[in-house]
Length: 219
Image (tube, rainbow, N blue to C red; front, side, top):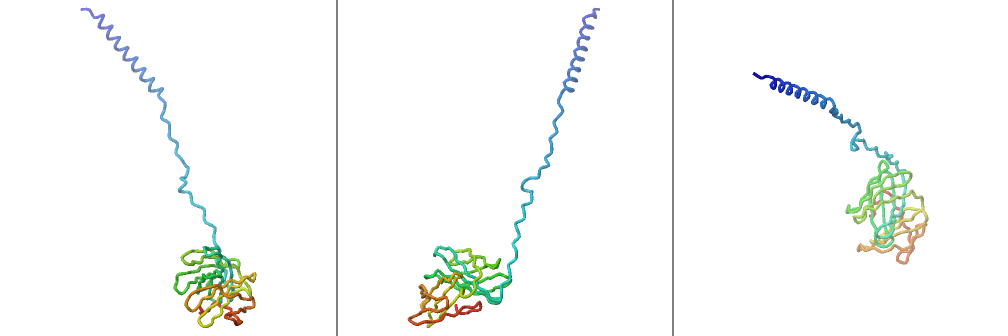
């Protein structure tokens, strides 16, 4: 019986298997290790707290009696605004010196004024800061931002009533006068000129206008 070729074939198989195992071991050893993913420590932008808005100082207390006058640009030209404060009440008047006017009344407490006209179609909200009243006047559905500075006599608000006709004037700090006349039928027109001493010629006679107070019920 011839066993030589079979022994040789067996040796070849064993040798081949050994070589295969050695190669597989080398490939496993040379394989790169998986790269670790670095974790991010960055805080998402949406989680960063927003900076706090600057604090607004509280309004100042109104003096017992005070007047504030300002000019407001608008679609009707410049609107002149006067606010008269007495105690915890206030009256405001705004007009364009032609046909537009509005009277408002309300409270003046803790340095804030909240006023409205009788029909509640116009409103004024403002606060006293640095001797000026700043806020918003809602006039004919149009919000107007205003600043009205403190004004000393003769600046202020004056009115003259006669037979259902009311003439209203605002005297500003420079002595300028803006006024509107409202007739008994509700129509409006420019008021007659008013002197800084409070006198005017109405219907051919010289009259003295009355200085308005914050508690007025004339409108």
